[in-house]
Image (tube, rainbow, N blue to C red; front, side):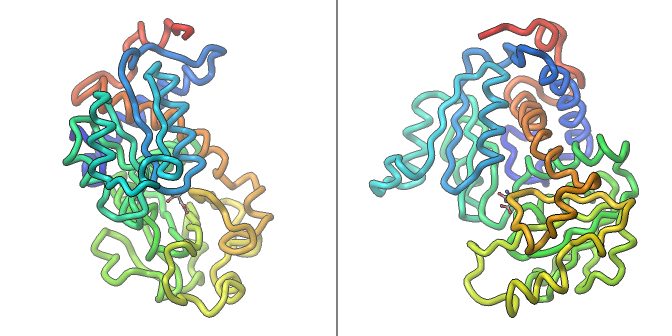
Length: 317
Ligand code: ASP
């Protein structure tokens, strides 16, 4: 595997299998009273976030701490970015601390790739504009495999604002790589032209939603919409909202969060037993532990379960 994780394209199927297996072994650590292993003791992880985040930033923080790394979190707001410092200068400044990894979020597509050129640290793309969010895709695979028992052959419908969604792009690639059949569905204005080339089918209505094993709803990304893509949110909801009528009792429901209640999802499905939304959040910690482990301490060909002295001998710190 690459030194950086910028895109799902950086991962072969074997890499994904290894990360999911590793996450399973870290789930055991998360079940203990002292949820800590010494794997990254003495290494520094910097979380550099230029865009709002709750789940991704908190789960990376918890993951780095559970691996005993020294963690520094820098949010653009309140940092020297407010004083006009450029991204390159900020990255070079932080690189002076010799971090092992920089976990980076940005509103700009491709920005994580730039950071990777300016630092000696491993860079993890924690979401760059509408480009990619590879660790979200990995935690979704992990969550779904745990619930469904397998991934191969599952029919996954990704519904909603595909155009502005980095999650959609990463997940089309990741689900496809693991043998799922992916269909994207939404209003024509919110489906990017040529998306089929990523390996998915396209639908513009929910008529055949019943075929899906998994319904993966996306948030309407209003902060990235510069024009008017749907006549109104009410109109959107009436045609595309996943509600108790549209979601079959055997179908699983996923959403990356944050949810716009009453827009892409109705309250009754968010709180239904089919919803994996909370499981997705929970998986974020172990999957991000596995990604940091893979980049900083693992490497190709390493065994799936973490070495004994790392998972069975927790070191309180
Ligand atoms: N939390 C996800 C992301 O950062 C999904 C979303 O914001 O809608 O891309």
